Image (cartoon, rainbow, N blue to C red; front, side, top):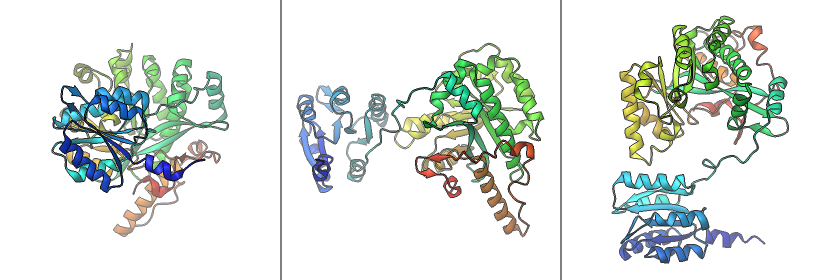
Length: 444
């Protein structure tokens, strides 16, 4: 039978691993005041014995234990107590502490944060109350779909396009959106892109998938520009398509069938694609650029491309990978890299987008550092086209009211019948982990 009281007590067991008795006493008293049951260890041997006994919820590890180092405990933690939350303390430099945090996270451990000696008790209290989630770092155990299943999904209309807003950080204006392929399977529910995009690429179905996303993205952006004339839409381009010399013509035809100017379309190419020297890739990118399509380097900082390759490619935009943005609050080195990237990109005349912004403080700091565009859950999760349109319409109405003008016509007015057919699928609703997305969830 489940004993909630026993579980509560177990969840407040703290192990302090430090070879300095005074430090153990200080940390212990703070923890006890917060309701923790405290255990102490002055060496690795003692710490390992206490970990094997179980019941530890959080561990405070001093990196320097005489001739030993606290990192040696991480391997044991991963084996016998992977759910234990780790707090590192040390008199070492902040970059050393940040590196230890990255090592632990790379091993799949839960890290609440780091503390530099002498310890500030307020920061210690805060970290003791943090319970980081493993959900963000866990890889899905779901099975990848088969080629036949994906092809059937394309034919049956189960694949749809969602749009995540991008924000001008200097003005707060909704300036554009990124088009994202999504799959709602009647049997399995939402299937993540990480499972079905590789299937599409390996099977050759990435071409019809991209055509569909392009059509829906262009139609949606054309409608959005009725309310925001400079609105743009970004579409991810698979490496497989950059080896096809006919691909620029595919984009040309899609744009020719609409009223959307080429400059309103942003083609996102991952940095790893640039680094891989795909045949024809640079020619295809240059032809797209000549036609006026804007080019963006996606996931910058993860692909190991040389500066020479960046200089030779006609990119106009650079997206800082979310892995740098997410660790900004705890990793000072990440901020230094971001500042360097901003400076480099602006010197080359490129616009900079930061993705993965989830906290307002990070958004404000990126804005103050000179980042141009923000994207992330702080501003809005991926939603259907009509949600973006309603938001733009309400903002246009608010501006008109302030200036004494009249409100724009109904949201469906600028959408042609040809485009509207793409979006009249009533069976599709975007639902995130908190339930159906409402307009007010998009941008506060």
